Amino acid sequence: MVIKNATFITSAASPSQFIKTDKPIIAVVGKSNVGKSSFINCIANQKKLAKTSDTPGRTRLVNYFDFQDFILADLPGYGYAKVSKAEKDRWGAVMEKFFSDRANACFVFSLLDIRHQPTADDVTMINYLHSNAFSFAFIATKADKLSRMQVKNRVREIADFLKVTPDKVIAFSSQTRQGKENVLSRLDVILNALKQSEEDDDELKAEE
Ligand SMILES: Nc1nc2c(ncn2[C@@H]2O[C@H](COP(=O)(O)OP(=O)(O)O)[C@@H](O)[C@H]2O)c(=O)[nH]1
Ligand SMILES: [Mg+2]
Image (cartoon, rainbow, N blue to C red):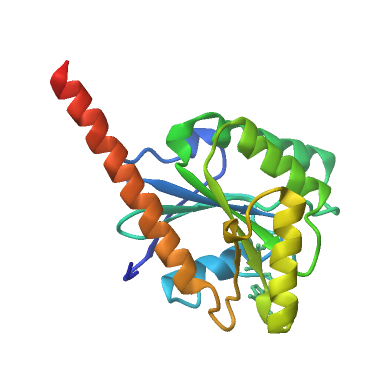
């Protein structure tokens, strides 16, 4: 897949502002500062499409980006200790609503820092995706911070921890672009599978 001309669509501050579209929506989740915005910019070949920040916890909105063949939804980060209880509750309500409706996302990239074991918040998020039957893959971010050997080991350790096969964990760096081709080909597979299942649905309907 070649990405050209990704553009910002809108920010949703509340569930009533979640967008409705015929295009497939791919969601990006992860704790604050894990590298969600940098991941999106890297995939888009742009520096400032999604705002990155050294101060965690700034993004309180669902930001939507049009990638032509699909929409990317950058979800607010979790696990930032210094936010108020009210803010956390509001975040929870937004996520709950987002993932309660399959129309809001057909696939999820769950971002994890390659250097650390997934946090309790990561595990809660992943279990939540599991129980709502979302398809997802893991992106192990900031791979440039480790040696090649360490990257290999950490991918295996994270996969073991999450009880998935290592091919489900993509080592990624928005600085070196390591893993980018892997993500793009994963997107191809996801979008083709979606198209196929839509065609199958259409055939079934035609037979009725
Ligand atoms: N070394 C390195 N730093 C990264 C990478 N991705 C993000 N960062 C840094 O991590 C911080 C948070 O990134 P950001 O994309 O804003 O994270 P978000 O809060 O998940 O959207 C910023 O200082 C980024 O420059 C990466 O692949 N490698
Ligand atoms: Mg961000």
